[in-house]
Length: 548
Ligand code: XMP
Image (cartoon, rainbow, N blue to C red; front, side):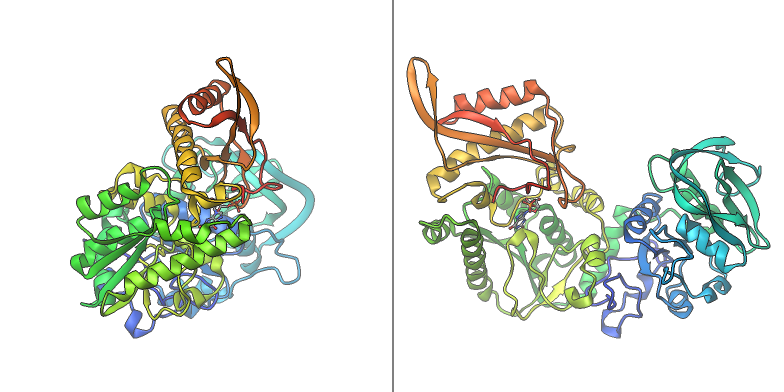
């Protein structure tokens, strides 16, 4: 590890009241060890959807980046000793009452600043330029003319005429004193400007989106040339730093981790194990509602390959007994959730001295939770179906500064297999919410077979990483068919495959017809009792991804 350059995943507790990462001075006990500190690029959030993408792009340039609220004072910003500040885009106009702003004292800190879209207009307005609504807005792909040959962000051999992505109504009409206009577009006379002496740059367009083909290069020019940041934030450095932070947080105490089979808990466990080895005990509650072979795979991966102490609770019978006769979706979820807690408590109760609980919280959860509560109370984790609220554990959240794709890369780096690292999201209640009506061992077995075929065919078609989730659903009806000369009265299987960014909305996947045909004929031929296959063509909304 290179001392002085690495920011570790922040330990729990370093969250301010707005749910942002460690923007506030940490208390002593949670402080990041000095040698792990580095100089991040802070993205000042004027509209969250833009800020996240910008932070990800900075990290792609191998420089650590965090999102901070615009309400931070210059002193608070200075405390973080950032290498640079990026003012994000935002939905508002700088002229609207209550438009987000930042204390202008920030310009006197001498820290490099890059304003993007709204952030650019704010820079212009606060430093004495003019921003106006001319009635000429620009949306989408827009031609850009680079008008200044030495413009820093357009260097590195970029063309003078290029395409950028615009999304603005107001525009900067006059750059503030000291600024050079470096580019323009048909309806933005000041599409880019710079004050090289003060190290303040601003662009009206969005360099962070893929529709600005040279956007990443522009960001990197600013990051490396203006901020002088070294490109040394890599997954290896994240592991080294994470290991150090976990060690410091837990000392020689015992730590437990509930494994769900999902990516986040798996990677969190592997990282914590790298840090503290045998002090970690994982608990894996097998409720019998996993996908085919998944329970064995979790055990195989963690116990044999990673050498992690694992308590494998075979609770299938208990769950099936609890689910007998339960058909209402909400009752089912509740039954599974409650049983999970009971089983987990029994299993973990035997681990003496356990003071810490590992949780796979990710950076988007931290940003979006909007409150610091997540740091002190146990959040019901998606993948484990909710843990008891009154558990007396301190949380270890080694992934809380990482985005999902970074967690996958980290998992690979930690030696986890692709099957776990690239696992699609899976609901805590498992196949229980994909079986309409009563959940019985026989119906679970039938659905597991069909589900395996769906996933195998998706993988064989090379679509696994493009599809958010693909699975089978077993409804509570039967239909008439004919196989050979025999009339059949069998179960249908419904195939559900969706594309999505975040599961909040989703679209049904336009799977090739021949792929659907292969799935259908394999399911009917290979799964006893199934005589019909249907494809769900409902988006979300109005549907949900799961059927229950
Ligand atoms: P819906 O069905 O609401 O699902 O569109 C959105 C995403 O959440 C997953 N999901 C769950 N995950 N416990 C979970 O841990 C649950 O009870 C649950 N229900 C849905 C679903 O798989 C999808 O990714």
